Image (cartoon, rainbow, N blue to C red; front, side):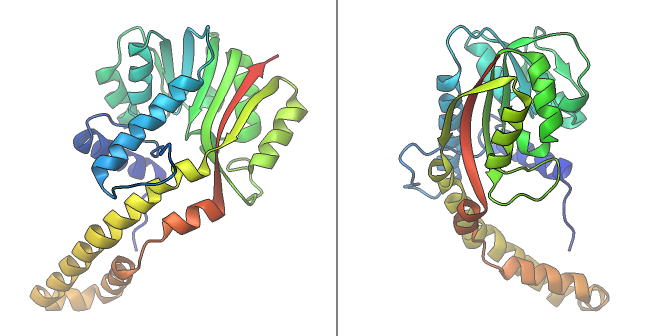
Length: 269
């Protein structure tokens, strides 16, 4: 069964978010009361806006300049510029950066590279990670953040509950150990918001199980009926695709068991 790359998945999610919601957010939703009363894409779009509002609420007073790491379609950066912040972006995806350039003002620079490889003398009041830190080599990212952050670093992101042993996707505990070992940041606040993020998956599960997967199964069955010879040639991939289409999504249950979502603010020393 074809497995999309991270880059392709992000491109598809960005186009979907832009087309359905009109804002292009790539992050999960934030549910202040910890539950989704309505299991719809419209409710998810509203929760994504609530996520952004929570992010803005957490930015320390006196912040004027921000580096948005893993800026995606530029939607967070655009919202921040509209609130008076000077925002630059760094993202390795040419397609996502093209979407960001189309919406951001000329004053916002976009560095098309990995954050670890960013080579520019600029520093910022705040270095921001919104669902981007877990993709990055944690130790190198912290070293780069120490060079870029004049005042604060803010993470709104999830950590695996079990360390995979590699440089990225480190646990929350390992991240704190790396921060302490580096000695360049002081932890100001660290809030577990997993329960407020998890309803995102109740919505996505409902959409997948009630609509997307049944439709995919019907489409594959229809293909088998109307293209029997081709179906025989493609029997193995078709069978795997059907099995996957009929499998129930349970991320609402598995995400909190496998990950913890944190809202963290750190001060540069």
